[in-house]
Image (cartoon, rainbow, N blue to C red; front, side, top):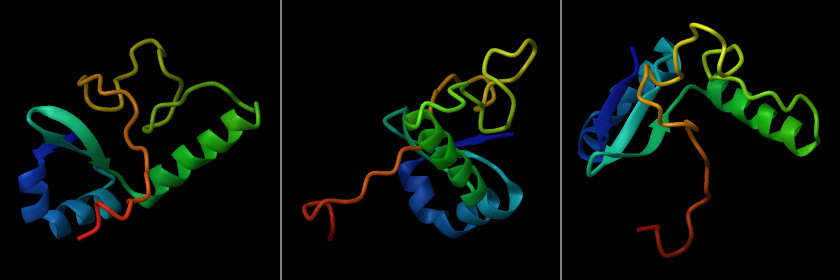
Length: 101
């Protein structure tokens, strides 16, 4: 089952959470003030998202696919986040100079 953790908890347990995402295939949603702000996912899931982005930009295969596989809206298919309905799992934005410490 996918887990939801706070930013504070994610900082304290980062190595363990990353191992669970990388080797256990878990998707861990990180929240701040009860709202999802990001997710820890495996490199395989990230590659899948990037491939889908490239295909969509090129106009190929525009069908949306859940991270767990299978088309969105498929009858009886669970949501990618265990029913939480958070939508997109991750979007990488490089840090700006102001955010680096």
